[in-house]
Length: 223
Image (cartoon, rainbow, N blue to C red; front, top):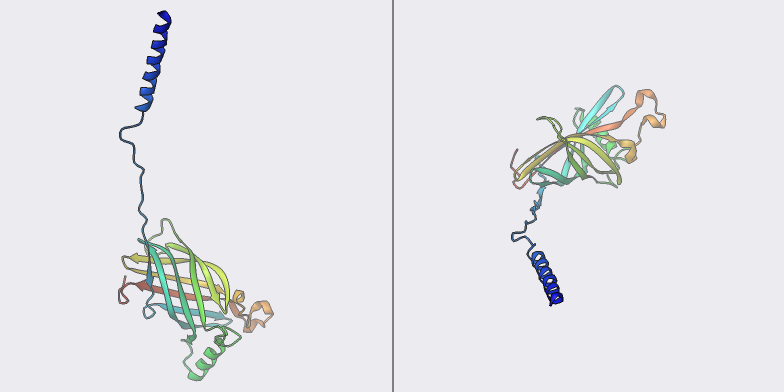
């Protein structure tokens, strides 16, 4: 009889342990937090409101002009810039500082030639953003993004990085920047210092593009 009592106690203890294990699952398990992804919105650029100006310096002076935007876009995620691109129509390149019509025509014709942008073979130039990084602590009116992207001129693509001022407001966005371009990287070597050009005829290897890209669902909307 004693052996039976011990076996019964062991069985009861085993059943008790099993009962505790079964009931150890929380009655109200904690739900995992979920984050809702914000969709990326592509805003088409307004060519009429966007501008691209250029400045090229040489010994004793400089020239300034414009190039028209064909198309482009800015991609935003909420109020954050995440991408974008634009296309320049190189056939529209103009000079703004030469008032003599004949000399002006001569210069713009030269810029379109093989010495410079080879427009007949390469009628467009493009830029595509590969990274848009916000600048922490940027003050109002100062550059608030570091933009990295691929710039293609004369069919030659090179990466380039520059600061930009970006504004995103609802369905509209604007990005502006002064971009320094090394023309040598795009096979534009006319009168470059690297070719042993006479000192008084050198054209700087760096030219600047002053870009303002305005994009939005409403082409007349302004920030």
